[in-house]
Amino acid sequence: MAGRGLTWLNCAGLSRLPWLLHAFSTRLGGTAGGYAPGLNLGFTANEPRARVERHRRRFFAALGAGEFALASLRQIHSAHVYLVERDSGGGLEYHPAGCAFPDRPSQPLLPGDSLVTAQPGILLSIRTADCLPVLLVDPEHRAVAAVHAGWRGALARVIEKTVGEMRRLMGSRPLQLIAALGPSIRACCYEVGDEVVEAFTSRYPQGDKFFVHSPRASRTFIRLHAAAFLSAHTPGHEPPDPPRARLDLVAVAREQLLSGGLTPRHIHVAEYCTACRTDLFYSYRREGSRAGRMMAVIGIRPETLAATKRRST
Image 1 (cartoon, rainbow, N blue to C red):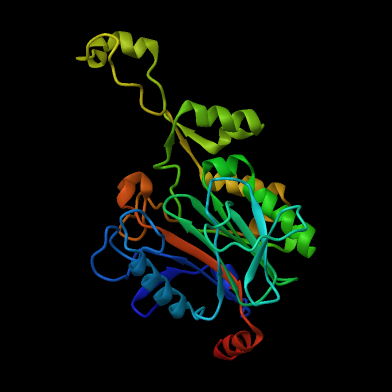
Image 2 (cartoon, rainbow, N blue to C red):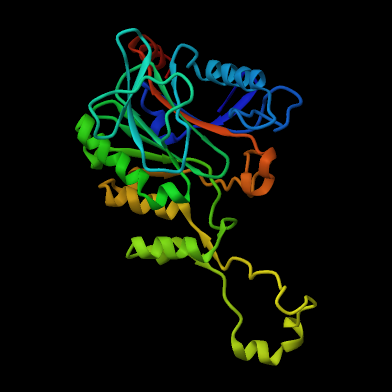
């Protein structure tokens, strides 16, 4: 999708719902200059705050979400889930999972990685630059969720826990839920160390299937081709072996969604690797501190906007 000089992705499985607003931003667009070139929507180091705020206003206006209240978290790679609702004064209050008492943050943002709501006019947001953004929709009860899933959050089952919270809070039936998995770093580029492999295989009986393993050279091959394995480094100072496994975050997310009760045909995946496509997306793995942030957003349109959407389609 495109508008006002910006480009974003929509999920076809969600776009058929006229009451729903959602998008996965790209880096295309934005004002000239800046430490992170493109449409940076995150308050990253060395990036002027005013520039990011200007980008956000343009992005929300292009989506038709200029009047929505923005819900955000201080993302910490956790499994913390919050219900977001309007308070009596029109502001936002955040209810931690399992807690009856809301928080009303100003600054700093509350720590967590998942947001759910069933109220119109609230725009749930997740920022990414390689981690997996997951949007969940309950068409039956008109409830939505936005999940930030890096490997630590995925290990802690943040996606499955969010499905559980939608069941508990909104009465959602998992078989009716629709999931959209946005662009993220994929198994082709996401090399990880043995500690990550061990973490997943120790917590998931099927954890090994989340990895693509690079073949190790056999002892026979090394003996026959010994010269190729000679090191010019001083003994004891050789560089560490490179990672031998690549993590498939989409496979982890799919497993959690299926375990949570979703049907496979309701799981939609955007086939983009952020590390492969830095022309379209930011990638912290590829760009380091110069990487900006994309934003995945989802919200329920107020009834007047939903009616306009129905007429236009």
